[in-house]
Amino acid sequence: MAQAGALTATWFRCAFGLLGLTAWLLWRGQLRFLRLDRSTAVWVLLASVLMVLGWVLFFAAMERISAGVAVVLFHMQPMWVLVLGALCLGEQPGRKRVGAVAVAMLGLVLATGILEQAASQQGTQAQYWLGVGMCLLGAFLTAAVTVIARRLRAMPAGVLAWWQCAVGSAVLWMAPAMEGWPAWGAAWGWLAALGLVHTATAYALIYTGMARLPTGRIAVLQFVYPAIAILVDWQYFGHRLGTLQMVGVLVMGAAIWYAERRASGKTA
Image 1 (cartoon, rainbow, N blue to C red):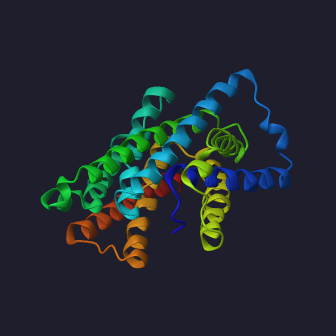
Image 2 (image 1 turned 60 degrees about the horizontal axis):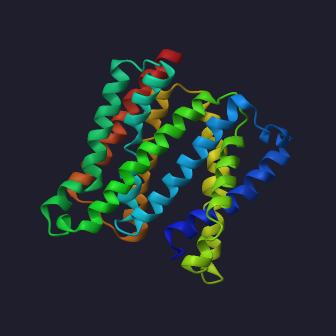
């Protein structure tokens, strides 16, 4: 909606997100936690670089495939979260949760419409598959950030996201000058919302939740986002769902319901 290039959109996301997260941390009296020590600095900076790269890949992919499909493909990350959580954190999600994620992944593949694309003429277009590749790489990078966030769970919510936005703002500050500044008006409103709402507010909440959940449960809940994104893409951007895509959304929903029902039963 902002009609901005991938690097420019990422810079605005980081710049406005940085303002919002600074206000959040100031309000909570947590600015002192922005100071990093030797045990956290490497992990925070690594997570920041990976997240910014993931954002750039995501926006670049949306220039080649629809927003809904890009969001869905980007959320191949739950399986990576399970794998990396087991390898790096020693967490064992359990066979039933792995099964739920595998079923949701099947639904995800159906929901993307990739099978229909492969059977159509568009499926042979290089730009489409380049967008798919960007999403899959971005998904792996974002999954790595999720695992790092679990390692840094003692850090107050918002601090990691603040550093991600700070690194992105510093690295990409020339992007708007190179790609062209967006026209003043509605475009700036969309970009401000991207940074203040969908980055500052959302990531503060997301990292708060991640600190309290095992990676297996995080992996399942991450399917909520792509399922809703497909429906929004259909409702507001006119990208209608095919039969297999609708089946895929229902499969994802059923897998999430099953996994969370079992988790709630165990908690009770």
